[in-house]
Length: 227
Length: 408
Image (cartoon, rainbow over all chains, first blue to last red):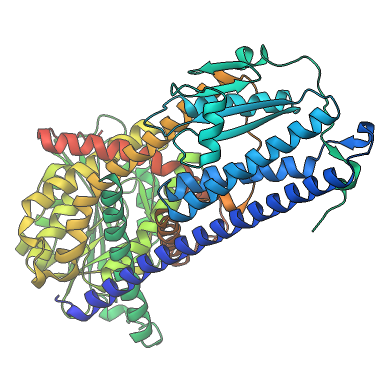
């Protein structure tokens, strides 16, 4: 029984239509992801600016009024997770991902500088860890190192980990690498004056950490939402 | 490269599904609802139903009893039980029914199902000829419903096959869902004269046609597939009767299921090779242009997809184990967030494929009058897809090696 070509053609058109719709849905979701990351990045920038301003305004405030800004930590964490997922999904060559990564690195550096200022003023010893990673090809063990650092943060919530792509061309990141004399053997983790190159376990990194938890890092006022 | 192959496989699957979905919708919208024609007893054709059996002592009695309960004139129905050299009590059990005027029992040396059917075919004079496997059971109205499909140009009618022992265990439950899906697919194929199997349980033929075809042959243990392809090669129409209910006993353990499916798949591949002139032959419609090529191609395609899934699953498990080794009990928090849901085109297309498959399954359940809310579909989708590629692979290897798949 011959079937007219029309049914074959209609089925083909519908199938192509389904494929096109699937591609469209995927693109729309990715655009929403980029928008969300951008939104979080803007929130983080505002939070940092707010913290800096309050720090300047309240420079005479006693240190015992300073508390950890959990909102900023959480938002930075959310930004990290989402940016990593977007990079995996869209690829590190994606223009929006590259732009967001640059913004993210700068926000991290600003956060780090601010934490150091607060710590210096209040004579605190913040635990700041710098983590330099590469691509899957240049650094096969970087994924494991990332998991280890996540586990470390779960064990020691006082530790702030700042992640940077070693190959980034952001001048501030290059400066950071030069200042800390980070070698190109990745993954690299810098905690204080200590540096590890190659995969470092939770135990190895914990040896570099001070024993005391709980470091105050922001003013009470920042517990009030600024947006 | 992997992505291109995956997209290609998805495209082909989707295309065939959409094609036959359109065919079903068009067929349903074209068919005018009318009262089921009631054929007077005097006008009903005579029919012979052969029950070929080999070591079926547990079920043959039930099979014969279901045939005796057929709502059909006594003088127009013959039931021929052919014991094909059983070594158990099959013959003795069947002989208990010999007193019924409709029933005759033949005992012969073991030669295979096709020899039993040919023996009965050679000794019948009825208008229609069919078979019922000795582990299957017909509904009382099955034969009466089947005969109305023998309109001009129709030479065989296939049944609506359900599972008799679906509630036995998880495996039979999954097969019940599978048969429902298969029912809808057969119905869809039937609208386009694209059926390539006349199932053993209660497929009916015009006796004249079966004789002219020369009866059944061994056909790699799948004579039901071979005769259907032979009919299709001669453009003899086969239709499906969605109200011709028959229920078959399915394998209850993985090994038996595996053996059955290896035989079916191997048999199909070898018969398809024998009838390769049908492939991409437009004169044979969607059977030649779509069904046969995709069935063969997708045997390998399913294996490829399975290997891909295994690779990803293995990779994921490996990463999980390494994470446990590196971080101990520290696992990332479970985040339920739309952001992290896979919305790649492949994931979206997989959802579309699943939805269409589910649509066909619901269609099949409605035809078989099964409950829609049964959990069999869940087990089918979750588990079946992981065990099916095993027998597909085994059958493909046998087909390439030319090694026959045993019946039991």
